[in-house]
Image 1 (tube, rainbow, N blue to C red):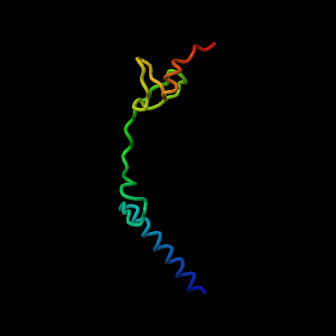
Image 2 (image 1 turned 90 degrees about the horizontal axis):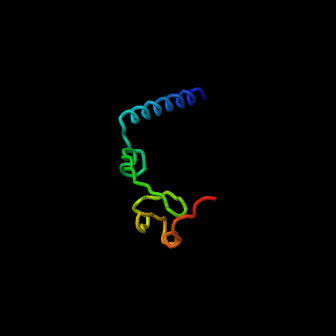
Image 3 (image 1 turned 30 degrees about the vertical axis):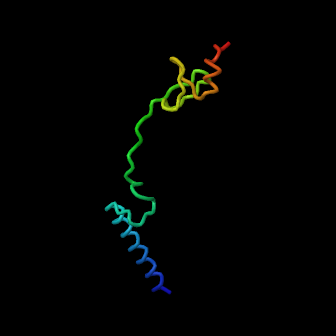
Length: 86
C-alpha cells in the first residue's frame, strides 16, 4: 500500500514538472483549439455611427444613408429622423 502511495506522488510530481516545462516552452501540441488561437491579433477598430431615428450605434459599413443622415435599416430611413424629445 505504501508503494502505491509513493508511486502516485512520484507520478504527480513528474506530470507537474512536464506541464511546467511545456508551458514555459509554449508548446501547443496538446491543445486542440485550432490553428493560431493562442497568437490571435486583436481586431482593428470599426467606425461606429448612430441611427438618426432610434439612436442605435452600428458599424458605418452597415448603415443606410440618406443625405447627411445615417439609419440602421431601410424602415427607419423611410420613417425619417426621430421627433425631438418632449
